[in-house]
Length: 134
Image (cartoon, rainbow, N blue to C red; front, top):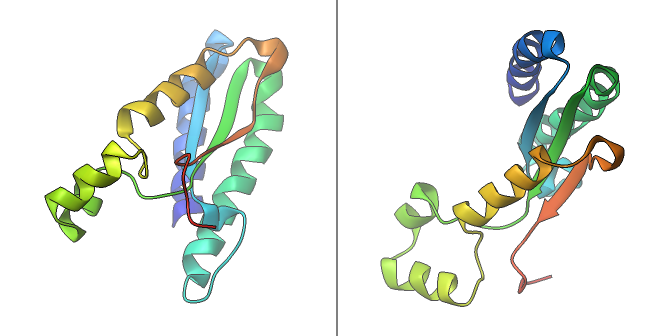
């Protein structure tokens, strides 16, 4: 479903952006888009497909002035999903130590991608906490 949804969203965004000759289509991925893991075959396949869709759209739409990029978010993100599964003190401690991704920092990276000059567009960036378990 992630691939099909990405295809539909990308297609509709491109239809609006192509006549203007500018715009950005930014997809959010996960580490699973790069490597699979036991128990996550369906998720990895969907995320890998979305990543390849982004690569194809980048090559197709780049000449029309549309920047397409894929952002790998590798780690827990401070949000409803994380906060429903962990107690407040644990989340606050992780945030204080920069061990989970902060939505505002992710957003800054998306804005940075959108504002890149065409002479040096990134296709993919990888966001992760500075401290992580390998």
